Image 1 (cartoon, rainbow over the protein chains, first blue to last red):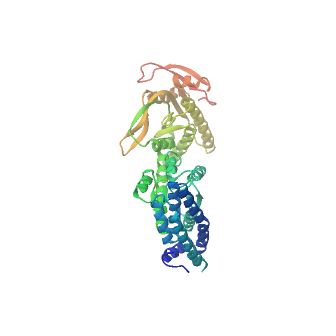
Image 2: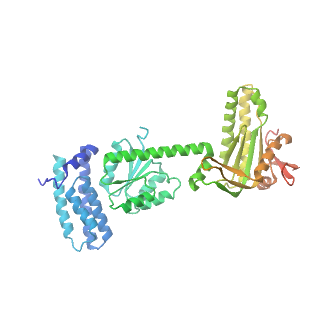
Length: 113
Length: 347
């Protein structure tokens, strides 16, 4: 399992479970899985259309949600995109996609464990 | 924990944020509803009363800044506490939110413990504000309270066209002497309640209570469509109320009450007088003096409601009255044409 401390901050995730209830967190993770791909798609579309503000907003949303689940590495990458301005190519988004897939696997393991 | 069960609105376009925030607040004992953008939030706030708004800044259609601007310009929503929840970076955003009237600012992801503390503090502040507002209203009538809330408090006044009413209980001294103090206080409270009801029901403002009498203004501080007509209708309703009260008193073997009402219309100088610490909304000017003289004259005239010529002219025959001729009042340069309003039971 790609479950390194970098992927998911376990204590942040445990805090979330304690505050909101483990069952609710399962639902919330599910919602994140539904929403996040749209945000990544929005990143790609905004980059292609050179829409800097749309790009920043999408990165911002993704950052906030990643940090909610303690997905620190994903959150850090999204933050870089948020603050880095419109990129010339999609490489940053590809890297983020990879990190997202890793986070999904880790979150699945944590919520189905 | 009086704040338990407060009604909260969460506005956030991000579904994960919205669900989590609503859930956390629900677990903290509140009733929570949510909106997916600023426009929807504003619609919900205008439809129903909420105790607190948790507002995200970056939202489609209408963002948090726009929502706060709208709230600030809306009389009914201006006092709604707002806690901004955002992960926007930089102090400038926080400053702008506070400037726009936000109570507090919470960074996302929101820490539940911090959230609880901030929400409770905001609700407590709102409770105190509501209490203060209720106090101001109790002592100053809602029109003055509204005027204060809109314009803030400043000593000084302005010249306005208004109708002034004086009213008192006839032969009150005799009544006081014939009964105990408890009964007198009781009677005064009943009397004031009935008179306030009639006056505020016609958009008048009671601005002075003097023993067994009161002074009311129609047309200031807030405009009234037709101050003279409103004042006369209020006086007629006051007379009816007294008759109802007298029917009850008769059943208890008590003496009947009678009131005298004087009404005058014209320029008054209205505003707050006093000091910065203790002030009262009042009206001064010839019109005020004339209304007081007319009220005093009701005894001599043997009529319940007397009005001056300016009020009579404004009624334009819509309320029946009789001309009593010109009367020379103390302090008046010229005689004033006095009219008596016809009541069902002229006295």
